[in-house]
Image (cartoon, rainbow, N blue to C red):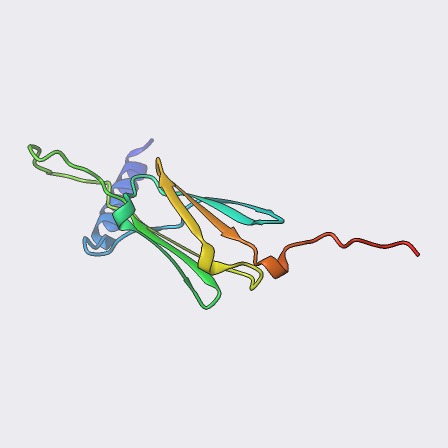
Length: 134
């Protein structure tokens, strides 16, 4: 690296630092896996560091909303002088088909992974139709 590159990097870092607002929170889109079968859908969302009391799962007007805030613990005897890790805020929304029964959503948070099970409405489930001969 030459001197000009290093100065430019320092300038970029200073600009980035000056643009940070300590009251602004960082919102992250959690990674999800979604599996659909004849019974409904199962959604897994990665929410590392999120306690149950900082998690909100809502269904409104055919949309599923996930909002959470991670807890970054700091031991009480330590005094913080500099922090580059902010408490992340997670948010994601999904449109749901009317085929799903949103009154029966099952939610489980374990080890930083949220598992949502949303069953299909009974009338929307595939069913076998018996065919008679004759």
